[in-house]
Amino acid sequence: MDIEGLWDAEPGWLNTASYGLPPRVAWDALQAALADWRVGATSWEPWDESTARARESFARLVGADVADVFVGSTVSAAMAPIANALPDGAKVLTDSVEFTSNVFPWQVHADRGVQVVAVPSEDLVAAITPGIDLVAVSAVQSSTGAVLDLPAVVAASKEIGALVVIDGSQAVGWLPLRVDGIDALITHTYKWLMSPRGATLGYLSPRLQERCRPSAAGWYAARDVHSSYYGPVMELDPGARRFDQSPAWFSFVGAAPALELVEQLGVDSINQHNVELANEFRAGLGLEPSDSAIVSTNLPGAQEAFAAAGIRAAVRDGKLRASFHIYTTRADVQKALSALKPFI
Image 1 (cartoon, rainbow, N blue to C red):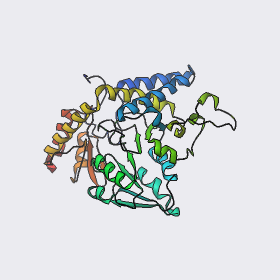
Image 2: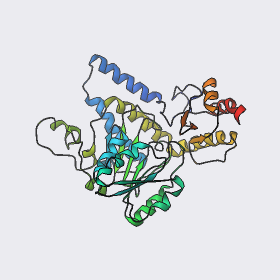
Image 3: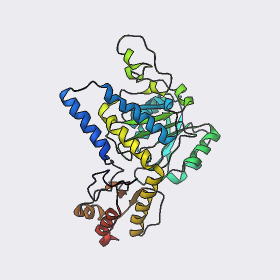
Image 4: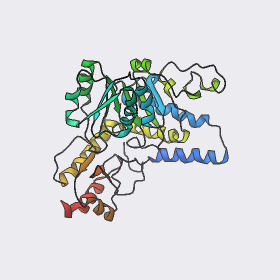
């Protein structure tokens, strides 16, 4: 697919790991919904159709049954029912640089003996040993861009019967991922899925659904949302929808067309584009090639040089972090390298 005209990216945006730029189709859908909201032109149901579309698109992207997909607003809130289901004294293994939305939900249960063990990325698989009850880790690390060896994590966890909970926020949309062998895959959509902040999607395996209590259940978690507005009669959806949080309508209005565009473009094609540009940038810095769309490097003075040149990237954990997505161009890469030339 020819992507020219699908985005309105200003040159120099190398910060999708912070937030993605909306494709024009998502932007236009959101503006239309806001215009209707402004004058009261419609009820909310047409906006909510986007929630179902986003749920279905996410299921296709990660190879899940749509009945096992739930919606929410944040990753940490989506993790909470899983953490609540852990037995007293459970041990959770994570990465020492794991983003805290996949750390704090487990740590807040320290008062009942839940222990979080953090190890360096390169030691994670070896640390999956008897006594670990749950492995909570990102498919791609936010600070370093390191891509998880997911098959190895799944295999090691299966050997000891540990649950596998993956934060896909820095991966889904550019890295091919399947839910096979995973118990939970939670993804916020405002980064690589290029959606408004406020739309989170998650997969829960049937075995994990049975362990978890839908403690945040409300009207939207019901089997029939339109007959669950009032009163004490509760009939929740039998699948993962019982873990739904009532969606932020406009976030999903923007998310549905963005996810569908990712499907049309193909994650494999996006992956090839992103990694090629990231590796071109790495080569210009004298770094070895990698398999990630995120480049993290310690380069004093780089942040100021980027700011002076109009390059928008990030500093995470004291290092420059540049991230490359489908709307990034070779001109963006060369502009960034030109700005950094005095420091290389």
